[in-house]
Length: 531
Ligand SMILES: Cc1cc2nc3c(=O)[nH]c(=O)nc-3n(C[C@H](O)[C@H](O)[C@H](O)COP(=O)(O)OP(=O)(O)OC[C@H]3O[C@@H](n4cnc5c(N)ncnc54)[C@H](O)[C@@H]3O)c2cc1C
Image (cartoon, rainbow, N blue to C red; front, side, top):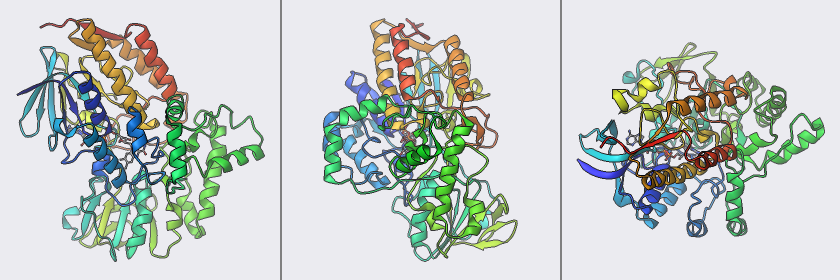
C-alpha cells in the first residue's frame, strides 16, 4: 500500500490541475488514470473532426499568465490533436507526469479511520486522507445494445475509443449511429473520406455553426493583451464564456430588432448563441423565437427538401440539449453519397453479417461508428464501489439520482470531493473554467481544515438537502427539463430522471461559494476525527 495525502482519480484537465495545485500547497498527490495516456476526453476522443466547442483561448487553463502568453492556438476551435499537444505542454512545463499512474482503473474506495483506502483493478492499493474525483462528465461511453454484433464481419468503432493511429475510411461504406455533438463533428469529415456514408439519426439537433478559422497573429495578440479581462468576463458570465452578457428579454424587442440581433450573433458566438437574450431558456415564447430562427437557418442549408422533415428539430426547446457547434454538418446531407436514416421511422433492429438491419431493409456497411455519447455526469462516479460512512455506498446514496452539496461533496462521504460534477454548473458551462474554480476552492477548503486541526471535512445532510432542493427549483424554473438529454439522465435506460447540473450560472454559483466561505464554510462539518 502506498500512502499519500491526496488520491486524484482521472488525468484529464481536472486531475492535472488538481495535481498541480495541491502539490504546490505542499501535499503529496498521486493521480490514478484508467487510460494509457494523459488528457481525459482529449486522450479518448480521437475521432476525425473532434474539436472543442468553446473558443480555444477560453478553453484553456487560466491559472498561469505565462502559460497563457506562451501557448499559440492555431484555430478558433482547436482540434483534438492540438488540445492534446497543449495538455502535453502543460504536463511537461509543470512536471506533472511523475505523479500520474496510467493504466490504473480505480475499482473500489472505502472510507475507514478518517481516510480512504483506494484499490485499483490490478490489486494495487493507496491510502489517502483525501480523494478528489476528477473522473469527468463524459468519460463513460454508451454503447447501443444491438443484437448480432458478433456476427458482423466489418469494423465497429466508438467515437470515444477511437484507435490511436486513426482509421483509414477511404473508399469504405460507413454507418454513423448518433447525431449529438460527436456525430455532428464526425459526419462532415467522414463524408469526405468514405465511398458512402449512412447517418442513423434519432433526434434532430439544433446545431450552431462554428465558423471556425485560423487564429491570425493580430487576433492572438489582441486576446493576449487583454487575457486577464477576458478571464474575468468569463468568470462573471452565466456560462463561463467571454462574451458580453445580454440582459434584454427576447420579447422586449421588435421582431425586426430581434432578427438583426440573431443575425449578428449567429456567425460569431457558437455555443454562446444560447445567451443571445437572457430569457431564452426561461420563457417558452422567447425560446420559440430562437428555435424558429435556427430552424430557418438549417432549412437554408439543406438543398433536398424531402430531408427537411427529418433534419429540423421539433418538439423540444432550443438549448435544452447541449447544442452542437458544427462545421458543415447540415450541408453534408446535400451530397449524393450521404444518406440519412431516421430511426424514428425505421428503427435499427440489429447487426447482420454485412451491416445493419432496420425495420425496412439491410444496409451493407464496412464500418459502423457508434457516436452514441456517454453515461453523462454520474457514470464515472457510480462505476467504482465507493463506500462511505457505515458501509453505505454512493450507489445507494444516489439511487434516486445524484445528491451533493454545491456539487462538491456528498454527505456521508467525508474527505471525498468531486470536480465539475452533478449539482455544479459543469456541462452547462465552459467546463475548464468550472474545473479551475472547483480545484482552487477545494484546495482552500483543505487548507482551512488543516488550519483548524480538522481531520475530516464533510457536507452535512441538512446542507446537502438544501442544495438539492435549490438545484431542482432552479432547474424547474427553466425549459431544460423539457427535453430528453444527458442533463436529465433520461437518455440512458434505467437512469433516474433528475436534472443534474446547476443552472444558476457560473457567476451566480461563484457568489454562492464565496458566501459559504464568508460564513465560515457553512454546511461543511470539520471535525478532529476519530484517530
Ligand atoms: C469530444 C468532446 C469535446 C468536448 N468539448 C468541450 C468544449 O469545447 N467545452 C467544454 O466546456 N467542454 C467540452 N467537453 C466536456 C469535457 O468533459 C470537459 O471540457 C473536460 O475535458 C473534462 O475534463 P475532466 O478532467 O473533468 O474529465 P475527463 O477529461 O473526462 O477526464 C476524466 C478521466 O478520468 C478517468 N477515469 C474515470 N473513471 C476512472 C476510474 N475509476 N479510475 C481511473 N480513472 C478514471 C478517465 O479515463 C478520464 O481520462 C467535451 C467533451 C468531449 C467528449
